[in-house]
Each structure stands twice: as structure tokens, then as C-alpha cells.
Figure 1 (tube, rainbow, N blue to C red):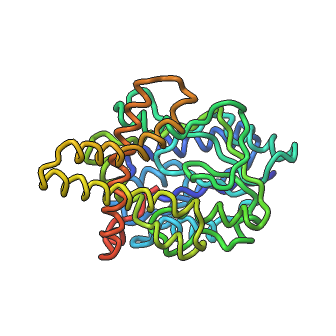
Figure 2 (figure 1 turned 180 degrees about the vertical axis):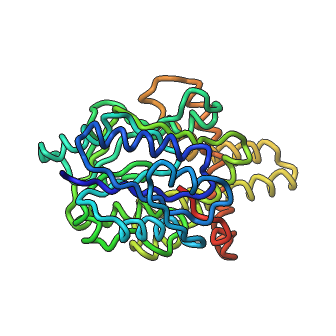
Length: 321
């Protein structure tokens, strides 16, 4: 029987890990696969490791590693012909693996992922922020990179690129899947069905903290993958927003409030452009406005993350799935 090894990095996810592992095992059984669950714990202080063991997972305790290194160690400890990666707060549908394996048998792609959505219980900003990633139009989308809330591939693709970066604190999924694209793997995203992200941000503080952390590896991504417009785009927009904010403050202090307002409006245009690009497919004005505000905040967080990265701030945060 074909075996799939499902690797799950984890840090203090006792609230969600049972749902993740149970849904993954059901999906493997539905697909007729022998399932190996490997949870790689980054030094949890809650009951997550005990819960995972009680559900038949092999648990590796490896505190202090990056999330990419956790996934790599999980793969090294696994044996499956197929590799699947899940975050520790993701619930997959029962036909998750069956749908993706059918696409592989039809020679449609090599590396697969489902779109990710939030449960309806999530706060409006968590729902809006996740909703922006949902695709519209065709069910299947070829792409150059995929995020890793869920990911499936044959082991030889992982081996061909040497796995995830052991050093990136964030952005390891983009780095990994961009390298897969570069060696010829066909990356395919499915709009439906979706996986559910139960670890949604429950407060503004949590959302701000996560986004600040996620923006912390932009410089390292550029260094590791080379300078490209795709990787430079967001850091440059962030720098531009900060420069315009400074000009607006200077204009206000010099007694030109109308000029200051104009500068602030111009500074908000990149956020509006990002919002429109991601929300027009949904035809929802409220969603456009929500994303405009969230992207404006995120652009400024990216600039703050750049400054903090100079002091190695991200290295102090444990990696979690």
C-alpha cells in the first residue's frame, strides 16, 4: 500500500492538534493510503505533544529550530513515498488527498495545495485577511509558489531541492516552492475544496504580531533567491509608504495641512491597489475597504520588521506550524 508521511511542525497547539491529526488520518483512509503522522515539536509547554502521541503520531522534540528545519527533520524521520505538510491548526476535508492524487494520476501537476479559509467563527479582520488569498475563476490554478498550510508531493521533489531552508525564520514556504518551480516541478493550487485555518487571529495584537513576524525574512529571501521584482515589490512599497508618511509629517509641521493630507492619501494608494487586486473578484465593497485598511497597516509593519530584523528580533520567536 502506498504510504504518505504527514509532517506537522508544532508549538503550543494543544487547542488544535487533535483536529488536525484526526482529519489528516481520515483523509488518508479515504484515499486508501497507509498514513504516517510525524509531529515535530518546537518545545511546547502545553499538552500538544501528549495529545499527538495519544492519536498515534510520532512526536519529535526539537526546540529552538526554525519552521523549515522542523519540517526537514520530520521528513528525515519519515518513510513515505508521498510527503504531505500541514500546519498544526489546519483541518483538511476528508477527500483532501484523494482529490490531489487523482490530479497527479491525470498528470496535471507535481506539487499540490488546497486554498485555505477561516471558520465562520473568526473575527472580521481574520476572515478578511484569509479571504484575500482565496482564488476565483477556474478550480485549478498553476502557480510559481505555494504556501504550506497544506502541501503534497512525491518525496523525490523534496530531495531534489534539498528541502526547506534551515535558516529562514519566515517565508520558508515561498523559498521552498520557488526552488521547486525552478527545477521543473508543476505547482498546482485548487480553489475548492478548502482547508480550514483554526488558528486564526483572535485579537488585533495577535494579528499585528503575526504580520510583523511574517515580514521578518524579506532581506534573507532576496539574498537566497536573488534580486527579483516579485521579492522586491513589497519591501519597496513599504519603504515608499514610510517616506511619504515622513513627508506628510514634515508638511504638517511646516503649516501645510492640505499637503500633508495629500501625501497621506498618496501613501495609501499602494494599499488600495493591493486591496483592489485581491478583492475585485469578490465584488464586495466592504471587503475592499477592509483590505485597504489591513494592507495599509501591513505595509507599515513591513518597514518596522526591516528595522527589527537588523537586531535579529525574529530569531527570538519560536517557530510554529
